[in-house]
Amino acid sequence: MSGRILVATRKGLMIYERAAGGAFQISKTAFLGDNVVFAMVDPRDGALYAALKHGHFGGKMHRSDDRGASWEEIGVPQYPEPPGGKSPDVCPARQIEIPWKLDLIWVLAPGGMDQPRLLWCGTIPGGLFRSTDRGATWQLVQSLWENPARKHWFGGGYDFPGIHSILVDPRDSRRVTVGISCGGVWQTTDGGETWECRATGMRAAYMPPELANDPNTQDPHIVVGCPAAPDYMWTQHHNGIFRSTDGAASWHEVSPGVSGFGFACAVHPAHGDTAWFVPAMSDEKRIPVDGRLVVTRTRDGGRTFDVLSAGLPSEHAYDIVYRHALDVDATGRCLSFGTTTGSLFVSDDVGDHWRMLSAHLAPVHSVRMA
Picture 1 (cartoon, rainbow, N blue to C red):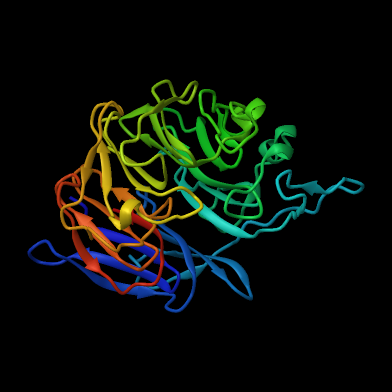
Picture 2 (cartoon, helix red, strand yellow):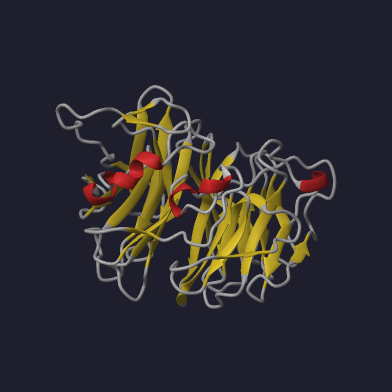
């Protein structure tokens, strides 16, 4: 099972490793006091990447090639200057100008196994960037940025739209799927030269009826795919849980059990019908239903859900789990999630039982297992 957990928090990066006997302990910390918004391990070469958002200096990116013992600052995605004479991009929901300027590095993802130095990066305000030199330099994917459909994207909890999910198909690294809040799911099959919106079947309850089923206005909070069966995808949508079994060509809503609202979602690495969620009350509240923190799990493609609560607070819990703060390891047995109140939980039995690793971290932005 997983031997390491990267926990990106509002006040630094914590690296947990299994000690003798199997218990997780913090082995290293980095960027203490700084806002670490996402961290990941590149499985191709073992490098660690951390994205930060400084209040004054903006976004920064760092890489470690020695398991977090030391860090090197690398490049940051930068938007080009808008073409001369171009009308400003305006967010259709807020009627404010969308800047051609990095606001937040929201997600990082390694390229395919046949692309050893390639990285992808999704940002707010809705840019997808590509690096071919391990993050030293970044190039905006102009084909998606310049797509006319982008003018309809808008922000959910943020002022501007953003790309938070990037899935590289292990069968064909040119097939890349991205999730956008709020802009649906987009997919390229030619390495980013062309894109198609692939959110047919999703339903946006927050839109006027005539736009509720428009694929380009959907708000998937996160999109995940099964590594062993890449056509099986899940999304925790703003108002429901949706599943695809045909590589995002179509989506089907499933009955969520506790609640259709939430952010976090993880899928089993080998079984596409098995997925986990952390439900919450609707977006006006953003707290666990009845003050009880639970994880839900389906093993039959969403027909039924188990409500997993052993080891989790059963009352007066007001934790929210962000979209990148739940993960499952490569065995499919070990899971971990972190909350907005700084709690970190782990399970070694597919989510049946949980134990708290810490109750004293800063708000957790992302949890990645390796």
